[in-house]
Amino acid sequence: MSTEDYLKDITEIKDMMNKSSRFFSLSGLSGILAGIYALIGAAIAYYLVSISGRDYLILHGKIFNYILIDLVAIAFLSIVTAAILSNRKARKNNETLWNGASRRLLGAFLIPLITGGIFILIKIYNHHYGLTGSLMLIFYGLALVNASKYTIGNVKYLGYVEIILGLICSIFPTYGFWFWVAGFGVMHIIYGSLIYFKHDR
Amino acid sequence: MKNIIGNINKAFDHRIRLGIMSILMVNEYADFKMLKELLGATDGNLASHTKALEKEEYIIVEKSFIGRKPNTRYSTTKKGREAFKKHVEAIEKLLKQ
Image (cartoon, rainbow over all chains, first blue to last red; front, side, top):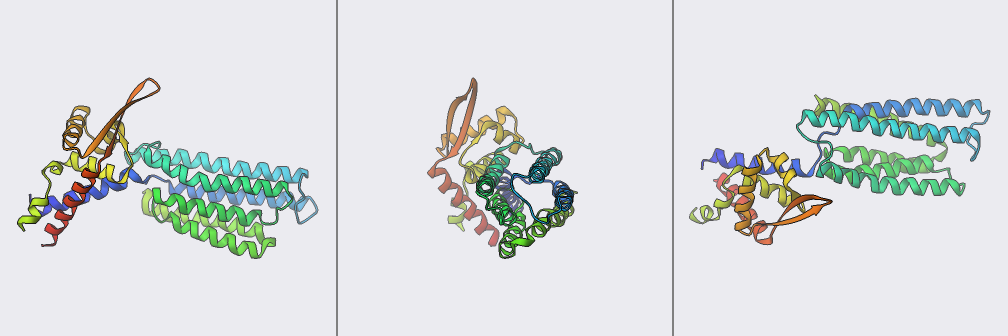
């Protein structure tokens, strides 16, 4: 065998190791859209609170329930969009959406996220909701860092940014809303665009 | 030089077999369908290559049922992992020369 053949072998080995353990078809466009949903959702929440006549939230009020519905809608739309667009990208890359790598990606992502979600709900029902924005950012950031092993590696930087925003937010909990807008809205749009221009096209 | 060539393993001297080992080095196990999709091989072709690696005792095959569907799972043996590492090291040394 010639040097060229051996080089090809090494490339093939690396390629197979990556392809079989990482899901590369994560859609950048879906990140951008998730950011836009978050901004729209935040605007709706802002409007709801402003018409309530108070500038803070009370638990078990009508407005509070609307805001919960608003949050669930943002999460639901973001997940559906990510699934549809990643499926399309996967087909273009000759990958399937549901393979070993994407299963592991989802597991690594969901465990910190669901833990955080349950924790936040327990805190809310115990009337400790001052840090909700901060906790959402921190647990979401941890989920991203954990999942980055199984997808485009630099997803972890978005995770670091979310964790840092969450920690700063915990020092200034009254600005929780604005940190939430920055982390889930603005950061998703910036980061989604980066992936879109680097990997999607 | 002779020593390096000695470490180049004939068993891995094929794209599909090299691919199977690469996948199994970074995954606890892989099933037939996953290998087929990743390597773009036909059933018969893939089966003959997995059999060759099995014969060398580099991989183990586990057959089981998921519901009613038969499922074949592959994983590496310690011997296989060591042989593959030696093979890759030998290639890297050759390329450095």
